[in-house]
Each structure stands twice: as structure tokens, then as C-alpha cells.
Length: 366
Ligand code: TRH
Image: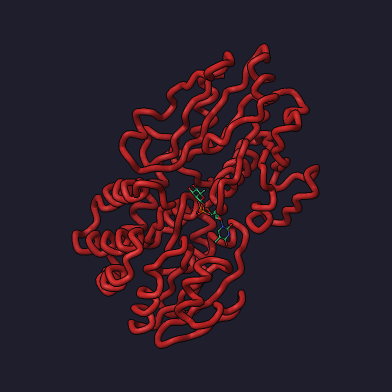
């Protein structure tokens, strides 16, 4: 089966990260012949092992990665059976016309953004007729329940995670990882960590650079090195491949993540987390945060839920004093939060994964 994934990079890494992760899994686990059409292939250079944007003839983990150029007639070969449009990015006009003219039209899927909001279930899978062409695309919503498209999760993910943990025995202080958007709450949190018990904060290169530099009074340390102030050590780690990032999350006690893909990976890491939702106008991201916390808090002890809620909401509001004030209670509830994170990951892991759901969804329509 052939499948094309289309992706346009709005900003940051998530659009490309999600599209690549889906493409890679479909090729690796379902033997699908996948082409990822992306308008900014360079975004993938650090995420994809050995990726060279100039070498489009090569396959990367079984996936062909091509530059998406609207001017070019993208579909050189026969049309695929399935077309996935990541995040409503829009298909090239020539390609759309070929789909409309095709005797057998591909299944056309619009992969939406992840949300924990309940209304997702009522719109997942709904058709959307094209305004001009005899084409219909279907909305496919990732989500946290069986009534949604599910979450991206590779078949061997838990086995790889647990194997890593089996050998990751080096003694270390309480370790947090920091993958966030620029956040005015960061200096206050760093102050809290530097006066609390020993803490190691591991930061991928290029993340929170201005906030760290302001707090340190100099640029953050280069990748592979660290600096200590009070009880806090800040270590800069290279921005690695997606698999390397997974290991960073697996080796920590608490993960600060953002956007979409790292948010999901932190849940598979089965460790407590704070999610910095992608800021949206009208604070729509705070509604998404509340929807997630409402789901996540189910079965979590009240004091631990209160601590996580206080930190997460202060962090997303950029409220430094409130985030710093919330940290001691969260740290004290860490054991409870960790057990819950393991339960949460296992419960989500019992649901079918997004890549498999997407193929089943299409098969029912082909
Ligand atoms: O980079 P992001 O902020 O992406 C965002 C979100 O996707 C958001 O929904 C979207 O609207 C916006 O972009 C435009 O965060 P996200 O989603 O976590 O994506 C980061 C990707 O980077 C993820 O696939 C993991 C990957 N990554 C690595 O491969 N190596 C690394 O070292 C790190 C830190 C991340």
C-alpha cells in the first residue's frame, strides 16, 4: 500500500515531528510505502538519524522524504491509496486535481491537533466535502479515548523504555528535563530549584536560551557541559534524534514538555510532567490544559493533583512566583505522582495506537 503524508512547518518542530513519527511507524510496522512531503525538510535534520535534505532518493527508516513544493506536480507516480494531510496543511493544487480526476480516489485524511477536550469524540471521523472538487476528506483526531484516533505509540516503545531503565542505574540527583517555550516563570522556578534539594536540570540545546542566560548572567553552557548555582546544576544536552529525546525523558524524574509530540512522549515515559501548551490567542491553550488535567487527575490523590494543577497552570500563565510556590508540594508528592504516571501510561497503552487506527479507519472506507 502506498501512502503520502503532507506536512508544512508552521514553527518549531512539532508539525514535522508528528508527521515523521507517523510516517516512520507506518513504514516500519505496517509495511506501507510512505512518502513524506514536507516544505521545510531541514527541520528534520536533527530529529531523523542521518537525514540529509539533499539526498531525497534515499529512504530513511523506510520512508521517502521529499521537499513539498506547490509549484511542482508532486505526484510523479500513481496516486497513493491514502493521503494524510497533517494539521490541515493544504495539498498542492495539482495534486488535488489529480485526486479529483482519479477513477479510484485515495482516502483523504486530515490529521488534526491533539486535544483532551471531550468534543473531539463527536467530530472524529466526520467527512468534509471539498468546496469545489468531488472530493471528501475526513477529520482524524488524536486523543486519549477509544472514541478518538488515539495516540502515536510504536509497538516496541514500552519494551525499549523498560530495557533502558533496566540499565540506567547511575546515581544522580533529582533530575528534571526542560523543553518549553520562552516562559517568564522560568527564573523563579530556577531560584526554587537552586535553594531546594539537589536538582539536575537537563536542557536540550537552543531551548529557553534567553531565560537561562538571564538567570545565569551569561549564556547557558555548551552542549555536553553544565554549570551549578546553589543546589541546581544546569546541563545542556545536544538536540538529538527523536529516539535520543525519548531516552532523555526516560532518564528523568520529572519532565517539562510542550506542544504535542513531546507531550505525548512524556506520557509514554511514565514519569510526572508539566505540559507547556502551545500558546494560542484568547488563551485557548488554557482550556486544552484544563481538559488534560481533568482527565489526568482521575484516580490521583487530591493533594498530588492539586500540586500538579497549581504548577501546570502557573507555568502556562507564566506566573513565576506561583510556579515556584507550587514546586515544594509537587516535589513532596513525587512518589504519588510517579505511581500515577505509570498507571496513566499503562492505561493509555492499552488503547490501540494512532497509526493502526488510521489504517483501519481508511480500510473501512477504501
Ligand atoms: O516543537 P514544538 O513546540 O511543536 C509545536 C507543536 O507541535 C504545536 O502543536 C504546533 O502547533 C506547533 O509546533 C506549531 O513541540 P512538540 O510537538 O513537542 O515537537 C517537538 C519535536 O521535537 C518532537 O517530535 C520531539 C522532537 N525533539 C527531538 O527530536 N530531539 C530533541 O532533542 C528534542 C528536544 C525534541
